[in-house]
Length: 324
Length: 295
Image 1 (cartoon, helix red, strand yellow):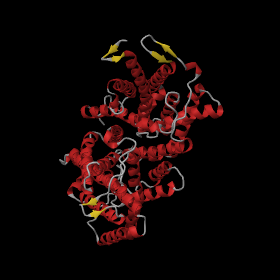
Image 2 (tube, helix red, strand yellow):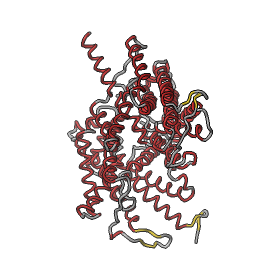
Image 3 (cartoon, one colour):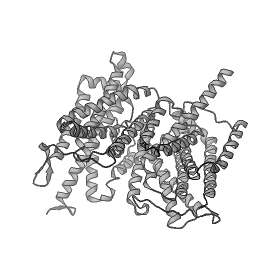
Image 4 (cartoon, one colour):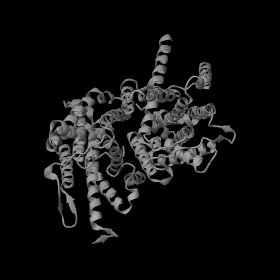
């Protein structure tokens, strides 16, 4: 049984209940900065998008990438450099980050899809570690210091992103855009072929699909969306450092997705919110965050592999069956 | 002073020796990974943490109980092996029925816990661990100066690697192990206690990592982060070698270590990434790895 196949939910084409829930969620997100600290919310949005991008690969193609930090952190570096050194407009800088991440995804994906399963995970981990070493050495990343003091600038030359609320709504818009793209990919014919590959790769091959191209395509899209998250993060927090490209970051995004629910659309969002909130909470407590993340990992893997959202959906499914 | 390609020979031999030392650790660790993966189908991400644990057990034994290096070389692998047995029995064994990736994720979580805890207690800086007096000093080999401890590391790791290989290829226990790797159900039907075999294998793999950790303690400092940074390189080594063969894992470990050492001489900037580059080339040319079989 492949990861993410525990429940092969037909993603419904927006039922009325989903529409209502979606509207409520968007309203809540619009109102959120008046109740919570915007920086925390923006951090959650960036990581939620990152986790959704990662989930596109594990949840819908069944490929566990252990190297997604390279795209997230790489894009953060590209965006930060463009905004700070070249003085680019923030959106253009973010788009450069996305493009950079996509190119990296093409290179890494081309190598990694030659193997499957556990080897795929090890190869992506090794390649992203190689990228981290490169980031440590090339001059433009400024080594251990990272790129600090990235200007937020004016979006399209008009909107002042130094206003916390403006920055928040721009981040929210980027997140919703990314989320919408992922939803479209998953529910497209392309997405259905991806799911077919996840369920039975040989059969997909026998049906005449060029599986490698689909996998590579999904890998590049996932990398580009992770880049969108990373680039946005660089503008929001105004820095890009080695932390973003490290293997720990790849581990964190896996955890967010696993905790929320692999292969569910909103699972990664739930997972990212929880992990970020817990990190904030425990950091104030002087409890080592790494240990906390490790413990959640172990609990998730042993007790609820479907993740929070996955378990809830499973429960609802069972109830429906019981009622019918 | 004689030179080769414009490099003074002592510097060249010195880097080859360092490469050989690194290669010893790559070989020991990829051997353990290959043994565990062969039977359990689990990539043991905690391997680096178990290596670190071995070094820390030696360090704690010396500083709190006064137990010397030689005893630590035996005790630390036993302690870490015992911890691994508990982990296998209580956690890993529950995951054999599900996708192998969950084994990777579980051991990744365990690695984070171990590393985070030791970092919390001991800080990120390394603790020094002195080489035993019998092995301190060095000898002049005529063409280079050889610190005795480094020579010992190479010899000890070779002996352990060859010993493990013999254990698996030439003994009754090894035959069970190989048979269970091919077809666990059938071997169990013949009355071999396969679950016990799985437990012992995981313990053995972890003990090998701990042994490598004790060997490494006097060379690198004993630090909480010593394992994970190494294990990622070892993963690349494993991808290059392919996990099909024990001997292949050992040979690949040494060869890549030496290649890395040579890179330090000729193009130092690339030395930290050379193994990853080799991995990428191997993936292009021979995706199954040098000694691997297509699955």
